[in-house]
Figure 1 (cartoon, rainbow, N blue to C red):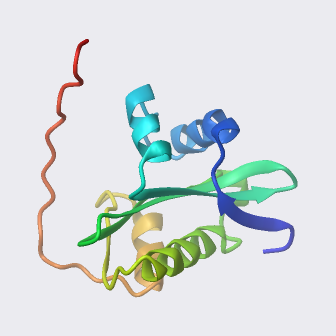
Figure 2 (cartoon, rainbow, N blue to C red; figure 1 turned 90 degrees about the vertical axis):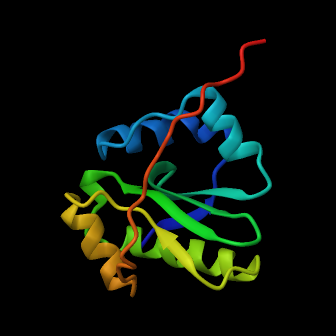
Length: 140
C-alpha cells in the first residue's frame, strides 16, 4: 500500500467521503447523520489518503457494549491494493483499544466484493437478520 496513509477524518473531508460512498453505491449522509458520525464520542470515521486524495473510508462505532464496522468503501480505481483490508484492520485495532471484544459488520448480501473482504478478515455469518427503521428528525 505505497503512499497510502490512514487517519481519522477531518471536517474538510466530508465531500470527498461522500463521493467515495456514492461511487460505491452507498447513500450520502444527511447533515444530521454527518453530525452524529463526526461529533459523537462513540463513532470514528477513518479515511485512506493517497497523495492527498481520499480514496477509502470506514465508519466504526462502539457504545461500550457492541462494536460495528460499516460503510467501508474504496474508490474503484484504488481497489485490489489492500486499502479496504487496511481500513478494517485499523478500525478493529481502534475498537479493541476502546474495549470492544466482538465487531459486527453489515454487508449487502449482493455485494460480493464486500463479502469477500469481510470473509478474508475472518468475519462469519451469525444467523441474524438486520431490520431497520428510520426515525424522523426533530423539527424545531
